[in-house]
Length: 485
Figure 1 (tube, rainbow, N blue to C red):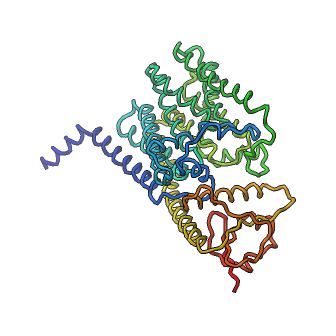
Figure 2 (tube, rainbow, N blue to C red):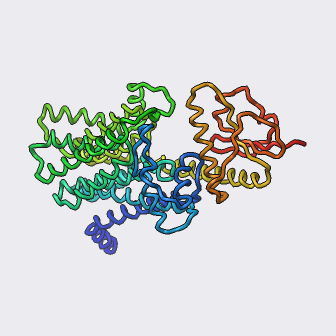
């Protein structure tokens, strides 16, 4: 009994230390699993991975000018430059594993940044609330963006990491008034401006809202900082207006061929991003509180309005993919956390974030399972196809012509480039190309590749099914081997 009392007394004296230890052990375990499955079975997929394969996959640097296309209105010169880090280690045939190691490093940077941000937001709470809520919030952050770190068709993963560092440094700058944090935040947001055409909305809205609604409480440093943010956005707009706008001939279809209305898309995307629904409710509560009760406008209100502005920018561009709204969802999380503590207190805040962690956390194992299966299946299929190419006389890309102006044609061309690039990398031949064929010919010992778009455009065409043997099927492309007995 005396021994039990002694142990209990020791535990109570060091309770915070034990809680902290348990937090970091669980945090490390979750992050380690996530990192492991970003790298495990690393393989290319057939799609926009081809952009990466054509450059760093073949040991070639991404150049800013390659992602500047005035005729299509595209201007994101820095989006892929992070991959150039891999060239420092040499090689002209860089593996997908190396690329995913890089993405895993940035994932760790993301998680460390958002965890530190959460801990400093909750620094005045008791240890049990601080660390239990922080763990739940970290899971929500990870669950929201983890899929993009397990694929390299998009550079969204890089923007998430930069955004996380930006949010942490902005908070520390406002709190500690040290320019080191302000400079890092400005570097992050300036770089990110050139990773996507709508990214300028973040510094513009954050800076303008702060200068408009916090002008009486801002310190001189904070005023300079926010004017620098506005200047960053205006510089981007000036470059876009002079280098891109006058030369646009056919704008890139950001809705990817989907005819979607502004209001319909806004409602759909807000509903798809549950964090934005919470933020919308919180925004209404804060507006009422500030207008009726004269509550002070805070940094967290600024994050809410900035996220709202980012969403509106995406709505105007008709961006109809949930991934495009992840940045706004990340921006509102610190605000949801802070105001939940303010309005709901610690106990109900924990309940809220346990529910959110369960909702978003369940997506992590689902993402891992689907991604690992997808990687293995595509690699198995395409390596078999490559071995069959060695035995065949010719390989054709089947693309019957049509007068119909359809987005299916755009997708078909995209798949053609994608699979040619992957096969070229696999066969160590950057110039590898399949032969284009507008009509089917029954030629002995040939392979014919046909994308799913052909089925949409020519549903009556069954020549490949009739004369060929299915030997390949991956990422909406089928391959048939034709043999004449």
